Image (tube, rainbow, N blue to C red; front, side):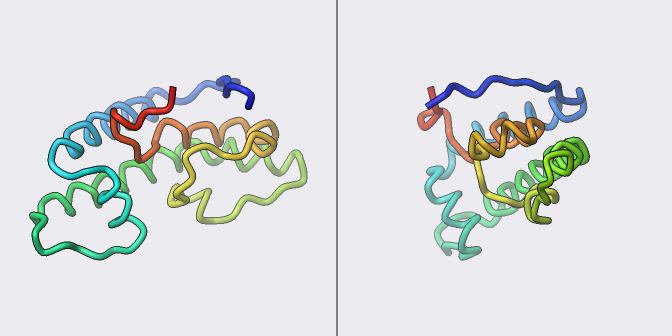
Length: 128
Protein backbone atom coordinates (compact mmCIF):
# COMPACT_ATOMS: atom_id res chain seq x y z
CA UNK A 1 0.00 0.00 0.00
CA UNK A 2 1.23 3.46 -0.83
CA UNK A 3 2.29 5.56 2.13
CA UNK A 4 0.05 8.61 2.48
CA UNK A 5 1.88 11.83 1.78
CA UNK A 6 0.47 15.22 2.74
CA UNK A 7 -0.06 17.10 -0.48
CA UNK A 8 -1.88 20.04 1.06
CA UNK A 9 -1.41 22.35 4.00
CA UNK A 10 -3.97 22.80 6.73
CA UNK A 11 -4.95 25.96 8.60
CA UNK A 12 -3.19 26.70 11.90
CA UNK A 13 -6.55 26.74 13.65
CA UNK A 14 -7.11 23.20 12.38
CA UNK A 15 -3.71 22.13 13.71
CA UNK A 16 -4.62 23.55 17.10
CA UNK A 17 -7.76 21.40 17.10
CA UNK A 18 -5.71 18.36 16.02
CA UNK A 19 -3.32 18.95 18.91
CA UNK A 20 -6.17 19.37 21.42
CA UNK A 21 -7.97 16.29 20.07
CA UNK A 22 -4.87 14.12 20.27
CA UNK A 23 -4.05 15.33 23.80
CA UNK A 24 -7.64 14.59 24.78
CA UNK A 25 -7.37 11.07 23.38
CA UNK A 26 -4.16 10.42 25.32
CA UNK A 27 -5.85 11.51 28.55
CA UNK A 28 -9.00 9.57 27.74
CA UNK A 29 -7.20 6.30 27.04
CA UNK A 30 -5.77 6.35 30.57
CA UNK A 31 -9.34 6.11 31.86
CA UNK A 32 -11.11 3.93 29.29
CA UNK A 33 -9.82 1.47 26.68
CA UNK A 34 -10.09 2.93 23.19
CA UNK A 35 -12.14 0.01 21.91
CA UNK A 36 -14.80 1.00 24.48
CA UNK A 37 -14.59 4.62 23.32
CA UNK A 38 -15.18 3.52 19.72
CA UNK A 39 -17.98 1.21 20.85
CA UNK A 40 -19.73 4.17 22.46
CA UNK A 41 -19.20 6.30 19.34
CA UNK A 42 -20.89 3.64 17.20
CA UNK A 43 -23.66 2.48 19.52
CA UNK A 44 -24.29 5.43 21.83
CA UNK A 45 -24.72 2.97 24.69
CA UNK A 46 -23.36 4.03 28.06
CA UNK A 47 -22.07 1.48 30.55
CA UNK A 48 -23.29 2.22 34.06
CA UNK A 49 -19.85 1.37 35.46
CA UNK A 50 -18.20 4.15 33.41
CA UNK A 51 -18.32 7.63 34.98
CA UNK A 52 -20.54 10.06 33.08
CA UNK A 53 -17.72 12.60 32.78
CA UNK A 54 -15.86 10.17 30.51
CA UNK A 55 -18.78 10.09 28.10
CA UNK A 56 -18.99 13.88 28.30
CA UNK A 57 -15.32 14.05 27.29
CA UNK A 58 -15.86 11.65 24.38
CA UNK A 59 -18.76 13.83 23.20
CA UNK A 60 -16.59 16.95 23.53
CA UNK A 61 -13.82 15.33 21.51
CA UNK A 62 -16.30 14.18 18.87
CA UNK A 63 -17.46 17.78 18.42
CA UNK A 64 -13.89 19.12 18.42
CA UNK A 65 -13.02 16.54 15.75
CA UNK A 66 -16.01 17.53 13.62
CA UNK A 67 -15.14 21.25 13.93
CA UNK A 68 -11.54 20.63 12.90
CA UNK A 69 -12.51 18.50 9.94
CA UNK A 70 -15.26 20.90 8.81
CA UNK A 71 -12.71 23.72 8.62
CA UNK A 72 -10.98 21.88 5.77
CA UNK A 73 -14.01 20.55 3.93
CA UNK A 74 -14.60 23.60 1.75
CA UNK A 75 -11.29 22.72 0.10
CA UNK A 76 -12.06 19.00 -0.10
CA UNK A 77 -15.47 19.73 -1.58
CA UNK A 78 -13.98 22.00 -4.26
CA UNK A 79 -11.30 19.41 -5.07
CA UNK A 80 -13.91 16.67 -5.35
CA UNK A 81 -16.21 18.79 -7.53
CA UNK A 82 -13.29 19.51 -9.89
CA UNK A 83 -13.12 15.71 -10.38
CA UNK A 84 -16.87 15.36 -10.83
CA UNK A 85 -17.45 13.91 -7.36
CA UNK A 86 -19.98 14.83 -4.71
CA UNK A 87 -18.96 14.13 -1.12
CA UNK A 88 -21.65 12.91 1.31
CA UNK A 89 -22.81 15.38 3.96
CA UNK A 90 -21.55 13.08 6.75
CA UNK A 91 -18.00 13.52 5.41
CA UNK A 92 -18.35 17.27 4.87
CA UNK A 93 -19.74 17.79 8.38
CA UNK A 94 -16.86 15.86 9.99
CA UNK A 95 -18.96 13.06 11.43
CA UNK A 96 -17.80 10.22 9.20
CA UNK A 97 -15.89 7.62 11.21
CA UNK A 98 -13.27 6.95 8.54
CA UNK A 99 -9.68 7.21 9.64
CA UNK A 100 -8.17 7.69 6.21
CA UNK A 101 -10.05 7.99 2.95
CA UNK A 102 -9.38 5.40 0.26
CA UNK A 103 -6.26 6.33 -1.73
CA UNK A 104 -8.19 6.92 -4.98
CA UNK A 105 -10.49 9.41 -3.23
CA UNK A 106 -7.55 11.03 -1.43
CA UNK A 107 -5.81 11.61 -4.77
CA UNK A 108 -8.87 13.44 -6.06
CA UNK A 109 -9.56 15.40 -2.86
CA UNK A 110 -6.28 15.66 -0.91
CA UNK A 111 -7.81 17.86 1.79
CA UNK A 112 -9.70 14.79 3.02
CA UNK A 113 -6.33 13.80 4.48
CA UNK A 114 -7.28 15.85 7.54
CA UNK A 115 -9.27 12.82 8.67
CA UNK A 116 -6.05 10.94 9.39
CA UNK A 117 -5.14 13.49 12.08
CA UNK A 118 -8.43 12.89 13.86
CA UNK A 119 -8.36 9.10 14.16
CA UNK A 120 -9.96 7.50 17.21
CA UNK A 121 -6.80 5.54 18.03
CA UNK A 122 -4.86 5.42 21.26
CA UNK A 123 -1.08 5.63 21.45
CA UNK A 124 -0.77 1.85 21.73
CA UNK A 125 -2.81 1.44 18.57
CA UNK A 126 -1.02 4.02 16.44
CA UNK A 127 -0.43 3.15 12.82
CA UNK A 128 3.23 3.03 11.94
